[in-house]
Length: 326
Image 1 (cartoon, rainbow, N blue to C red):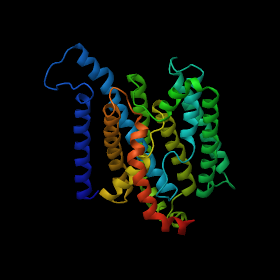
Image 2: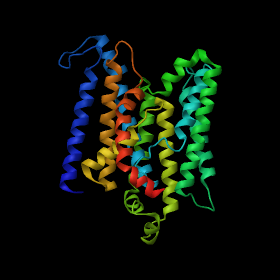
Image 3: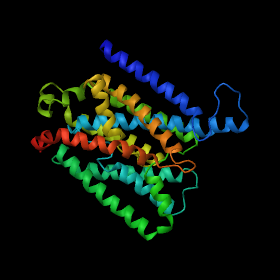
């Protein structure tokens, strides 16, 4: 790892720690970090804000690393973690749990969302198979078809059960309001292990970005690498969406910001993207909590407001390249 990249990585990590520390005390109710605080302050700090900060870090890390992996596998700068339908499966499961009134039962909402996400993963995987291979174009088409179909089902369910409309939409647009520390730590552990597994493929991803044929000649088993990463990343997305809903644009814009900072080497790019993603989600959550207080804006709305303009800029910048590839 180059010295400049190491410095950028360390500075990003220090910035993340500083923002996480400030987020613990900053909010609708400001808490003085230098005072002992009363029982109410400690309750806010350790039962509400600390779980939220940890979850924001896990979500930002998981979505950003997933975005880096998908953009490399699909060789598409506009690819994001939600492109292959897993998120819509999780959203459908969450919507079903809320409509059936299961949201308050023991982990029923994230469990049903996760199961539906895995089912959508299997569906996309089966549809993308072509003569024992998984071509990028077929994979993308399968993802788009499943995404569209499941989104239609969600709309139908919400239309037929309009009483739960607000609750379903708020959950789908993303929230870091989960306070169950056991669930958060479980989510964090699986996300961290999965991100480390993705990082294990850094060298292969560096070669795959040069083209699949060239990667094959250099000894990379491209099909096996794509399948394994597809499964690992889909598990990350299924887990995060099942707990937090859909928080868009993080996996799209953060990998590009990280590339501008440290370059395209995935060994440096992934940890940098993970830290920047955590910072971005923490900042967006801070705005979501305080911008319209006492109301809370879904964090997916905030990330979209920042991400959409960047997406348009990226689309304009890469238009000629995309047309050539197609």
